[in-house]
Length: 221
Image (cartoon, rainbow, N blue to C red; front, side, top):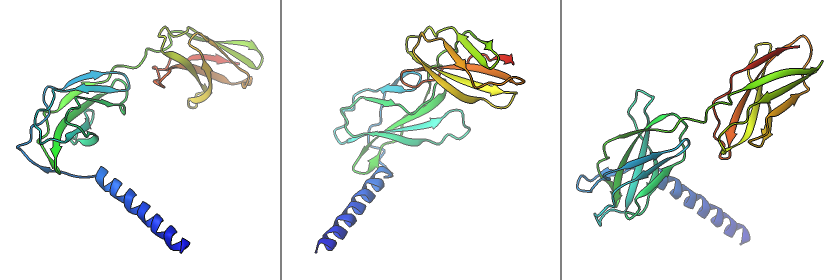
């Protein structure tokens, strides 16, 4: 008896999860009579894009679909990235974007499995990332010790510095992470004479947005 109950419980979970997946991938037929979203305004940030639109008056409408395309690609295809399930809502935020990149958006309304025509595409660009750390210098302070000094980033949103190193012209690799906006040094003891080391610093904000890499500084031991 207990085994039968367990099997039924597992089957019910599979059915429930399956329905959720199908619902998430639902496609709509088109109903030209449904009003579409109008007067959409975008508010770009580095790693997010906010939208506001005029309130929808059509009482048949249940919600809004949001589609996004990458303007850097030749294709003009759009992918549905979100659904607002209430016609009274007038805002949406896309948090899956990258700094300094252009995206296209289009919107539609839906009701009873039918979708309105999509709005005219809106092309918007996210804000550029933080500027690079303006100064970094490597110093030999002992036969097998390199000290890095850099100028703290001026933006108060920065709280981390990522140290990357290149050995003998190979490839950039992560070395360490330094915490604190005003912390401006790193000491590398994993170096050996007879090699050339290049370093660069990448500032990072509280919400994990990376600045552009600094110019490299080079030292030969």
